[in-house]
Structures are given as structure tokens and as C-alpha cells.
Image (cartoon, rainbow, N blue to C red; front, side):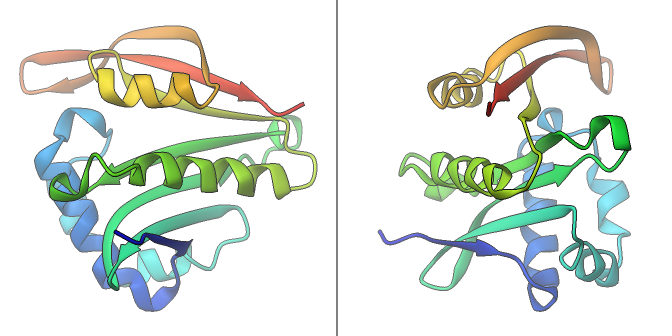
Length: 168
């Protein structure tokens, strides 16, 4: 299966919103946003984001179908502009196991390396998400802390592990 990865553009907004809502339905504990919050987002919100100078959302396409996404955001505060954050990694369930998540993360890391002055990439992952954690460890991310009860879904709490990759 050939996978093409590219930056999403304003015309991808509707397709992106669909996969984002799918992610929130299928893995609600993995994201800080909820399905209810995101379903009300306008397509214009995504169109604006996709034109940002500091936020980069990459899409993985198989036969022109969006099957995975990840977002890289650069910090904009003067004292933090050496940092970027990876978030919202998701690969549709029927396309997992083919290395798409790894390709998306590698693309985000490569893009971070291309940004002048960027020295590190941070992310967080639900502690019980062993597949995602294994991917991040394999790509060179290291843990630096745990946020206990970071996400609350109904009456269930999930801990988040914070990870970093130093580029310099």
C-alpha cells in the first residue's frame, strides 16, 4: 500500500474534520478535545489553521483517501520558540499496522528539524497506550514526567506521559 504524506491545505478541511471526529469517537481517552466540542467547529477554523505559519497538520493518504493525521505546532512565546509539540496523531483503525503512524511522526520530526531555531519536540501520550508509547520510544522520544489523572472521561481518569526528543 503506497502512502503519500503532505501538509493539509484549506480544501482538506472537511475531510480532516471527518477523521478528527472518527478519532474522538474511537479513542476518546487519547485526546483532550471531546467529540461534542469538535463537531461544532466550523470548517473555517481548520482552513485558517492549515494556513498558519506555526501549526502544521500532515495527512497520510492512500489512494487519495485521508487515513491518518498528525499536527506539529511551534511555540510562539519568545522564551519557548525553540520548542514544538506533536499532537492529534491518529490513523484510521482499518489502516493500522502498515507503518503509517511512524511515517506521520517522522514527517513531523523532519519538519521540526527544518524550522530555524527549533531544538526539541514534545508530546504527551496516555500511559496505557502501549502501541503509541512504543512508537515514540522507537523514534527516539524519552519520557520526562507523568501527569496523574490528566484526562477524565466520565468517571475514569487517565495518566499522561510527557515525552521529548532533543534535536541538538
